[in-house]
Length: 71
Image (cartoon, rainbow, N blue to C red; front, side, top):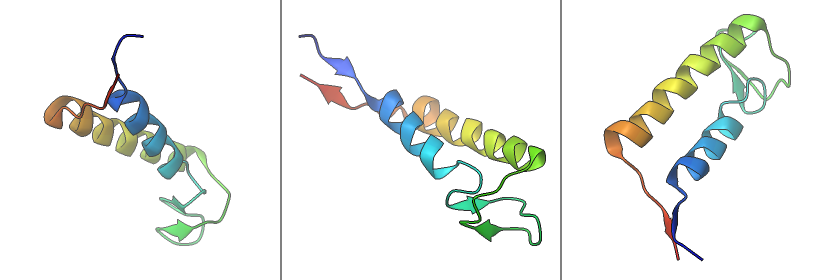
């Protein structure tokens, strides 16, 4: 088996889980700016979380260059 770079996969999965709107937090919330664990979402919340996800994954993978090797 060859060695692979698991950095993008691990970071993508972790950011996806953490930034899922309504799971841990929702920005903006329905009643407040930030709501925690309300298990609901909205179109604007999905858009905001997508922008945050894109920004963070760009920082981790391109600017910092995180690499996790296997093998």
